[in-house]
Length: 279
Length: 258
Image (cartoon, rainbow over all chains, first blue to last red; front, side, top):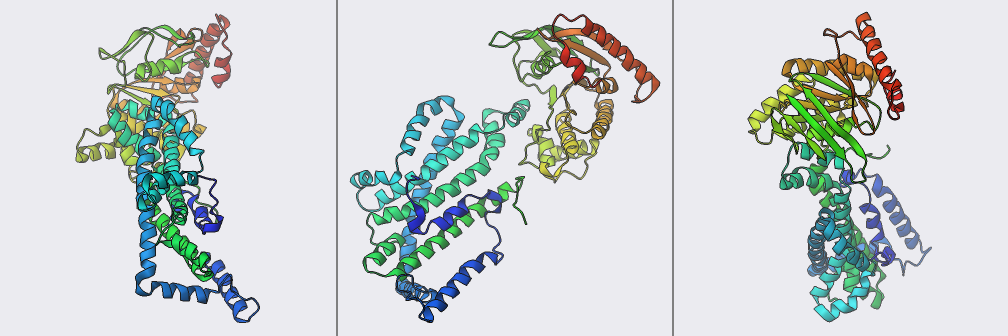
């Protein structure tokens, strides 16, 4: 799956945001982060207006804004956004469900791990895009094959994250549970789950990032709506402003959903003792 | 009363970590286990706690055989081992899940006050110093009112000042609850400050070499003449034990902080 290069899909900006620790996930926008893109946008706008560059292949911000306005007339843009988001969330939900179940089993039971993990690690080495032809044969060219591809992309980081987190739980903390004679269920609920929660959230965020990445690949397979369709359409009809607009939408949607995911779990992770970064 | 009969631990690789320990500790005694590394003192503690299983022999507390962790036996480890996702009060109340929230709250508040941390209940473990964390660990172990409290080098990671402070604190708590304390330590002085009895252990296989009653009145003054005299007496006996070594004994002198 990592063979899929994010550079051309506008995912890279969000990918960078997936990595940092959980605690600062929904950091307050303090304005500083807007300075660089704003300066670049204004600069580009001025250069194009002065006629110093043509702006044909990289349209200025005003034209992109115009395209976005145009697309949103009649609800077209919303339809594309909803189509793509629905694919991501369905695939994400399925991938998380499968990844969590299998990851938990592999982490908790050595037998399951020895039985299942080698196969999954082998499958993980398959570039996920390689599944596309097969999924199209199996599920047809409509929604099911797209969702399946996204689910596969989401599955592996979640599976690995959960399994690794369980295997990495401090034995000494588990022993505290034994001292107080927790039942197996109590051990899971009161020690294991809280202990893996930070890694789980990171795994979910990583999975969601890959979900957004794979939705583009899925929509490249052929779609009549969605942001990926806008990309393909923009390329075929020579509309760079539409391509850039879609790329920007991916960046915004990815950042927002990642932030929402972090915000959802933030109340449960306030206890974390983390290096919050320098001033 | 804590009764240990012929307690042994043989690891799967055949190493005799502990060979046939017999030890009886009266209710309210404080026994310090000292000895070099590999003498089995931590192994012995873990067998008493029920966290590890013996290869042979029995541990009984109040006539109940200990095979698994038991409500009559509490333990404080070298590290506080607080659960980082629970605040201080929730950590202390961790073993009181069977009580109603109101009862639990009352016990936790009292236990925290006893260890001098009243008002700290809402803090996170990460906000505590090492000494405060270990006090919370003490409170967590004592709040369930065990008859036997095991302490595995509980203060060894603390600075000298905090350590002395916590030793005094432990004695105050002991005077209130009168649990039996079994303490593993490397520090002869700590053993002398705390213990009613010092048990010296030897390795290969781990066993009890000698045992001394500590004849010092409480509160014990660390720098009194009587304390020094008792220390000399113990050290002399200790050296006599070491001078007659059936196996290597190097760890004891170095580890004893002499």
